[in-house]
Amino acid sequence: MSQPNQFSLLKQRRFAPFFWTQFLGAFNDNLFKTALVVIITFDALSWTTLAPSTITNLIPGLFILPYVLFSATAGQLADKFEKASLTRFVKWLELGIMCVAGIGWITHHLWLLVAAVVGMGVHSTLFGPVKYAYLPQQLKPEELIGGNGVTEMGTFVGILMGEVLGAVLVVQQPHGLLLEAAATILVAALGLRAASRIPLSPAPVPDLKISWNFIGESIRNINYSRKNRTVFLSMLGNSWFWFYGALVLAQFPVYAKDYLHGDHGAFVLLLTIFSLGVGSGSLLCERLSGRKVEIGLVPFGSIGLTVFGIDLYFASLAFSAHAAAGVQLDALTLLAQHGMWRILFDVLMIGMFGGFFIVPLFALIQTRCDPAHISRTIAGMNILNALFMVAAAGLAIVLLGQGLSIPQLFLVTALLNAVVALYIFSLVPEFLMRFLAWLLIHTVHRVHTVDADRIPDEGPAVLVCNHVSYVDAIVIGAAAPRPIRFVMDHRIFKLPLLGWIFRTARAIPIAPAKEDPWLMEKAFVDIAQALHEGELVCIFPEGKLTRTGDINEFKGGIAKIIERTKVPVIPMALRGLWGHLLSRNTENVFERAFRNGLRSRLALAVGLPVAPQDVTPEALQQQVAALRGDWK
Image (cartoon, rainbow, N blue to C red):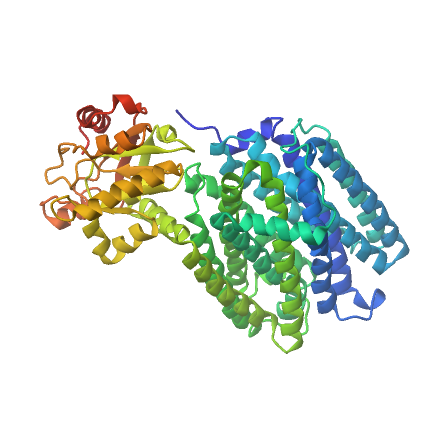
């Protein structure tokens, strides 16, 4: 049965009004901020005596300062109050702030506009925890990746449109400032209208007592999140992305003017390409992840951020040698310049791989944190985001002040990203392991799943499967919606790459009783402990790889496991792996390698759960054989 497209959510009231509220909010933020940055960059003398590079790094810093001060309170409010009403309050606040900004535009008062920047930061701070707590409350688990992808796409399209319109409107003579003021007020009113249609979203903790001590509450939120190691490190990864993005995006106005020798249209072009990249990367996440939370995409995204960030530095140097010095070029003229397409490709790829990086992290945080604490978890993440973005603005000001060029700043950011990524993935090897598994089934193999939704999203269960090759566990793990503890022959842990992968995946080593009775008994203890903690455990009851392609006799280990821990058993069957280079097929290795073309076709079929009292090795073998059929 075909799965509904992620865009079908836009026809449903549980998602569409929320989406348009978020879209218009992101649109208005950037309609306002970009206009202010453009007017400061290209008409600085009539507004301030400060250096344009200082102001363009100061404005993003001031915008996210409220995240540090008010995120803890915002998280509590989102957990205590009904989300639709709270969203409408936030939209009324936005309308008031845009009216204040309108006065600033008309009176040519820079610091009133800067105050409005801080006000919009407050607006975004209050809406952030509501936004990301709303999605898991309204969407099914299998819709979360698609919903987050559409939301992130909409956010960056809104950012793009706001940036483009803000940069275009404010330079229109003689009424650019008046047009900008009117546009921001109109968009705020449209956002309020969209928010009025958001359906009721009950508060998870209505009796929560609000603590107004934002410092103490911020520390409590972060400390609470630290108890879940994977969630907390995902929060840090998310914050790092915003550090990276803030550091790069804040340089675009001056980069467009001083390095590309472009006018404000060149700045708009860079923002357009970057936003298209993030939007397309966010949408591709659902297709690449198979409609599940696939954290293997996170290392993939991180690699792209480093590779194309480094190339942007070299592309900038190459372009500078061919640009016409002292001449401001419009966007169309820039496209004809030697090396410009390489720069735009790098910017597009940075945005796209950023989408691969950020969407799975959001979904992971939403699915693995305590539902009653999700808004406060998001608030804690927003605090970290704010601190990282303030640090990004500060680092940019310091490094540029020390004489670094903007292309050199791009290079430093890309190299820092590589160091941070290696650090995070060393702390949570699950990211890297899932990436290798994801890479395997998206390059060497094409894996089709049959009834994979029968694997439970939560709670303990034992999975049993036929054993065909040394990569069986990797294929199963990549196709499953959550981590699995595999029970593996202890000798496989001695293999160079596979051993590292299975240790990283916390696989449970087992040995035959006649070879190592202590290790065998320890394996059963570890299995019982994993099931007690609500995990999935997968065993291969044959106890060895098939030498013929047929299913060997199932051993009695499964009965021993179920005797200790009464949990459901789910039969599964791998199809198409017989003949794999890492199977025990004795046919010619070159014939096997090229028989199915460059990408071999595999399938994983999942059967109905079997109640503990009905489990026998013989019955399970018959069910697995029926699921596999004739396709070995």
